[in-house]
Image (cartoon, rainbow over all chains, first blue to last red):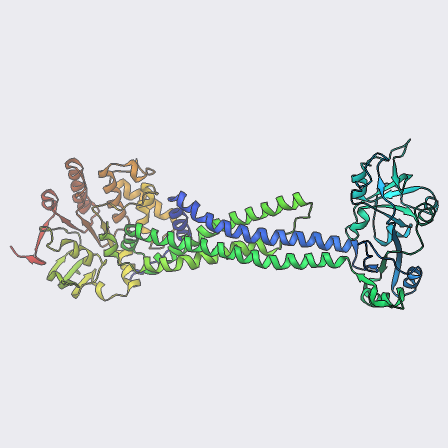
Length: 400
Length: 224
């Protein structure tokens, strides 16, 4: 007996699935849009968080996590309280300390651009005594000019923090005449301007002068108020626990030791936790897109009863009909998935460019996005497909 | 010789309420190469008879055999295979796929036989030539007249050279001139191909073109 089995070639199934969607383009596009938005949300969340985490990690890596800041609480006036004069030398002796940079806030001295600025208009700037070790301890860089050194420490010369230079209107140190600023009633030549110091924002808003000149002209009494300690990364915790007893043996509890990089690490944790939230939101959007596909496919089954009847009359089995509808839903959601991945990558690229990040997207995100979309499409198309396949051929043909 | 189509004591009851007995013990047979017209007033059970005979529905009782094979007892896959290989159906509403060209619509007649696309299109081109539409291969259904659409549907039913072609009111949606063309075409195909054709019709001209008329009344074959 001749072979009379019903067969549908894979290529014909694919053609039927694509053809069914091409014939209803607007509906296909709108339906795919739901999935595309969900996938775009997932991919962009993954891309943006990975890029921002990478940027944060790079920043932490560059700045290091070995920096500790030592203070002695606050004075009655709200300023920084003094540390013992020997604190710097004592801290330097702790095992694991690589560099120590003392600074002293000069509470009596204020910085102005000229003598005509009202005294109350301080611009929130501070004047600090420091020495050449500060730049290396903070891993800071000079934007213009030079930093304090043994020669300038004794002279009325200042180096301005990034924000301080902006506040004082000092932007160009080009010769022949260096700009000057008025500190504690004395003119100081500006020798340099620093770049931003993410781990020491108080330096950004300071005018730095050398210790000798501070003692001579600005009332520095030999007590540091804030000490920056650069440690070996592995020894940071141990050093932190020894600083109090070393800097103020008579009352170690008054000494406060903080790790500025902890702020960046905390930001990293915040980014990680918000990723989960946004991924959840993206998944909800994707679910709604899947429900949209299921809805559209159910409507399609009702609208295409005659086509289903015809295909059954031509020899399609129930399974052929079901597979065709599932394939249509899969193609539809794959289209949405591909569009969503492209949109997600574009959003990530745009934001990374705007924030000066390196664009980083996890390798699994594009393929996972499309795969996820196809899975959702198949799941959404399953019930309508079963309904379509259960239509009796005669009933399907009779309804038109 | 085995009949191309054989119905033996076929009953079809649609469950109610109220239950409707559409066919009440119909017996008939169609020999290969015959063209038979089934006529009768509305509600006499003609369409039900066609659905059962073409394997699109199952009888409540009795036997329907196509080429000697009992369609009513076959599982869905086997019945679908039988429709793909042994049966061609022409509908009053044409049922063409609107997004596909004439040749692709005809080629769809072989879609569920697993025939590769190129061979399907070649067979479809040949079938369109039989019905005089070889100049309309790439036209979409909306670009064709009613008569031409029905010719495409006939070519689709014909392309796989099935054991029986069933035509349900093939001229029901056509004007007089197109109807005459379709009648002439069916008669011509019956003689030249030769195709076994069972046509259900109200149209006297279609019925007159058949070699034999079977009249249905109240679900029974009316004997003259």
